[in-house]
Image (cartoon, rainbow over all chains, first blue to last red; front, side, top):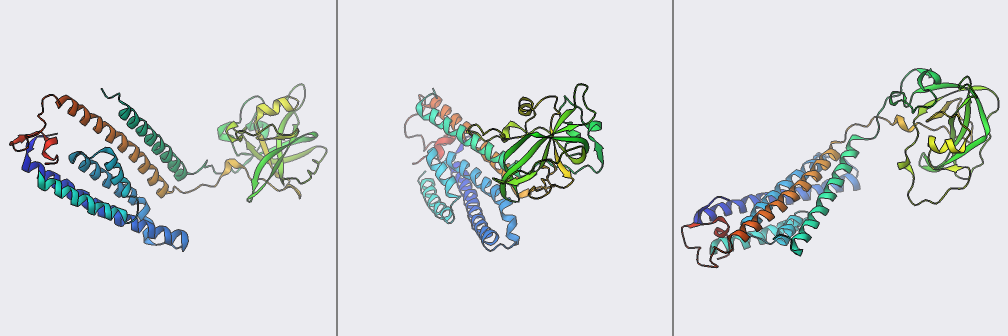
Length: 113
Length: 263
């Protein structure tokens, strides 16, 4: 890792937090669209434009994992926390709750440093 | 240094995740590309022109329609169990067919699937006398099709059409592989069997292909995460003796890992 001033570090970590938040929202919305798609496809048996969602959602989730990974090492999370945040991205609505809590916690830590 | 129970446990977890991802990935990938794809070859060939005794069925000739003349041996017949036909479970009726003009000491036998029957139904005897039949040439079936843990079958029943197994049950000489009878069409209660090697071409399912790639990426990501954890741990261990416990946060130049630590 490169060295930098404390202020630069805080700034870099804030950007990591922003990236995480963007991806958490993208993955969270993607997951809801995925559920909607599955309902339409397997329960109502209709084809919609949402049939494209399953193909891309995995890659969006992948992006989400990368931002969690980045943030977890920056914030020195224990492994279990990183894994739980990753898994939260697979449960509808829980990803939004997790995003809210992680954002609050991370801001507190960044403000204190 | 990293051989603590915690790290061994983490490594075991990593291995499990990677194996699971790899397996799920290849499963989805396999589903995306479908099964064997082969268009039926148009022409009908005499069996002996495309397949000789003593050699496996040529890959190029699998599913080929062939003519055979000769006669069935009514006393050499087996039931191949667990065969699906239109979603129903039944058996294939497999009968030895002596092919005329093959072999110096006696006619060589080709195993012929005469048709499919629902389980329990009485097997009609094969027609007697010399005749010509047309059927699809199939390679010997793989042992992988056998159900694991199945007990021995009653006499007269087999699980797969295996050339090696048939050699021990029927009088040699035998052709390798077998033929699924197409013409004359099997008479009721026998039902015609469609050849497994001629599965219809399936278009590539991009959704499954994408899922496959995604699973593999998840596996790679787990490895990446683990390596990063090991590196961070090593850096921390190496840095431990030199770094004071507290009080370095107010200095201008601090190592990165402290810039973000809790104040």
